[in-house]
Length: 443
Ligand SMILES: Nc1ncnc2c1ncn2[C@@H]1O[C@H](COP(=O)(O)OP(=O)(O)OP(=O)(O)O)[C@@H](O)[C@H]1O
Image (cartoon, rainbow, N blue to C red):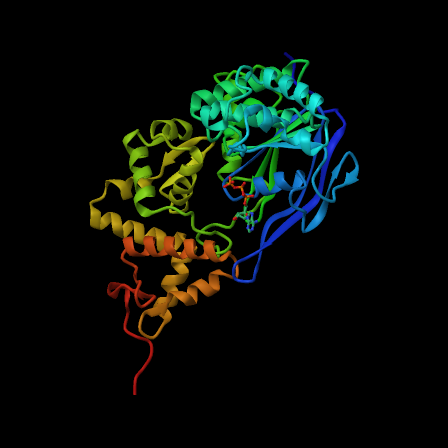
């Protein structure tokens, strides 16, 4: 098989699309920022990014299910003003109608298009056959395994013969083997003559999946979602996960996803504000556990290996990796996690010394912990209301994210014995050991 060249017609064109949602506190939450990209016939494009980077929002904008706040989406040159007539979507959650048979589920979209019953039936049977579901036409979704349900999801989208097939993490609710099997089948269909769509756009947070399937990987960064990199895959199909070129691309994408974006300046944690460098949402227990594992494995581990070993999604581990890197316990190179001298000291010290190391690192390198610590130290009695910090955080975060930021800072501050939080009083108090003689004079 040959690699795909990207000279096909532009099917969908996204031009400077930004999207904001109203936040719960009456504020605006910007989720996409000036995104421009073309999706062409003959190519598979993966939108890769961490949780919250706006991948699904972008895909829904391409489908015309939501409109952009500014910018435009065009299908074959015509600006969308509602659902995109050239796309069909496969969802992570299958989204089948439980009261309809496989056949009826597959026919649903055709019925909505007003296709006459006999033609509907014929086209649905063809799609069902193509996706390996023949024999299950009259089954109900509850009688099917997850893999079979997702086949119905594929058949339902493919029967519409859309120019562009959109897929939102279609394999992530399936077990590893089922997902692998379905991916390979999809790729065989795509490489064959009969595939009824011209292009595919898939949302994923799985780097290997992106390299396995895509001709082009668009990496999205967060806060707000923006295109941080674009990587051409250029490997012949079928692709071999063990090939050095495959591994090299996976490593490059790890580098991009774990923050070393060449054109995106990220301030050092020692200098950044709490909004410019948010705390990774990781508990002390979680990040300390990760550092311990890296130490136990000789000071260097491969992120995918460790994720597989712990039965975690890599996406779940990334906040722990970010937290350990922010505190200078680990540094990340490609998919490798390396223990730093500070990380070694932290993980090998006795509990009291380990807490002291943690406290020093958090106070200097975790911007929100530093801000809270300084504000408490400057207050008259070392106590401030949590609501004060929440109000400040809400200028840069949604209400939920502000709460998560504060909860994480409190967890870190408590562990390091820098400050404590009284839930009933809603107050944060500086640890007595950190209180210097008060600067205020009393009469
Ligand atoms: N309808 C909405 N109203 C308010 N906020 C929304 C809405 N849809 C998405 N968001 C917010 O937009 C941000 C991006 O969400 P989105 O689902 O697009 O990200 P994602 O990269 O696909 O994440 P995941 O991998 O977790 O699905 C999130 O902070 C989410 O809470």
